Length: 257
Image (cartoon, rainbow, N blue to C red):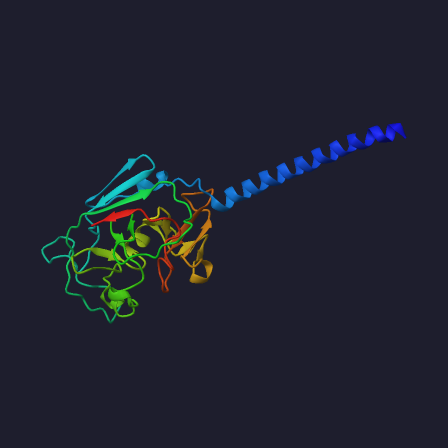
């Protein structure tokens, strides 16, 4: 009986120790899973070298990168002044093309973007105007025409590379920048939104991406050629909203015009 009395406290101590270890292991596993889910270790520094264009520069300062762009496309367009070497009459495939009255002119647009993007707790809707920058320095606009209306009619003013200028002459892409996908491939890195997450073309792993493959912000997490460990990224698709959905997945940086 005495030996049993001595064994009971010992067994109780062992049981408590096992429970504590189990709880500790669970806590570690939960923390590891949270790290996978949150994935706050993204670093986009490696793709900055892909940015190159007329009047485009960037500088890294701590954990941010500052892009300064004149927003000038490095391809032909009927929106260049006729005396510009890049002027070319419309030769695209849209039979309903109607040139708008604006012409391309140099801008001074500055983006300050984090190098370590992460999911935002409170998602922000994209504003009218620049929401990101493509790898050739041309800015991205969201899926709306002036006044927040659909692009249905405005699409007919997109040039042969599917961009056009706004009233102040700032050229931009709302939908697939075909100059870039023709040059680099349909699965290529196209640029960044101002929250730091990358934008890719309409192809992934040999398959065309559709809206059904993406979340409400028009992105998903998977491996890419530039991020073999995976990263959240946006995709261009052929249907509305084309580039971005209900807002930024991350926290947008500063944009000044």
